Length: 346
Image (tube, rainbow, N blue to C red; front, side):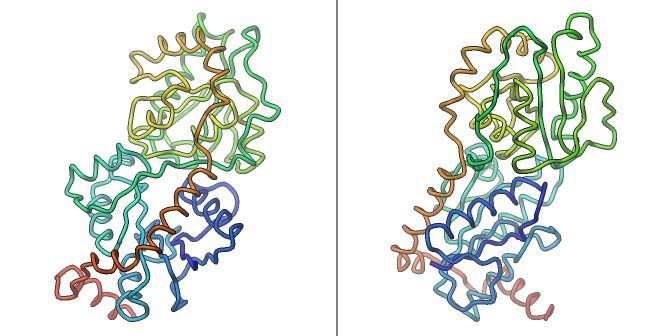
């Protein structure tokens, strides 16, 4: 198959969407499929929309470009749309509506968590061909090789990492932990390392701040710690805690967004500042048991990519059904508008 993934892939540290595209591209190519990131070929079998917002630096093409392709180049190409974003993540007010509209050109919709799917359904998304495919990280990079679990003698080293510096990435909790380290109770017991970009109004005093890293450098830095913390709010999936878990670190995770779907059974959940310290103590008490369970953590990019390939193959086999179900009514005001805008922009 020839598959076009709508992501401008970046080198070095970048967001989880970029890593998704890298992992899927490599997986598909290793299995003999051709992968591109444009719509310049007239024989594309599957188009995967990953970021339809033209203003996004990672967007290789938009839903408007896809509609134009289906209308004038190849009407038999199948379209999949991956949802991995929402207004709730960064307190915006336009993303969900935009993505629901963009999805009208898709034959299949993928959500990275059940939480995200239900959020969109509550806001008007009502398409029937939907799947949940959980994210995963590259196990060749993020694995427990050379990782040493906490011996319960030295300081417990806690780590987190983020590319994005939005406040909702969890900075309220990270600053709370930073202050906690100053207390007599914890100063000789814990350390905290933050890897990545820091929010402008987050001023750490007791935290080890490390520049953004990627690949093996990131994996090696994560494995210097014993416990992985994520406090990211309304995260649809999040690659950060997946990478931490694959490195073997037990998880201390916030009950928000799709995160619990990824972390359940592999750590301790907290709800916010009010119970953070209690849950940290609970994890310390159960550290050894949870640490042993980490070898069974199920999320990695091979499993994720295999799920995508299975879906692509199934869609390709059932192409007549999908084409019959497709309802790109060009008299519809939405499609008339996007086609007009596409033509006018040329």
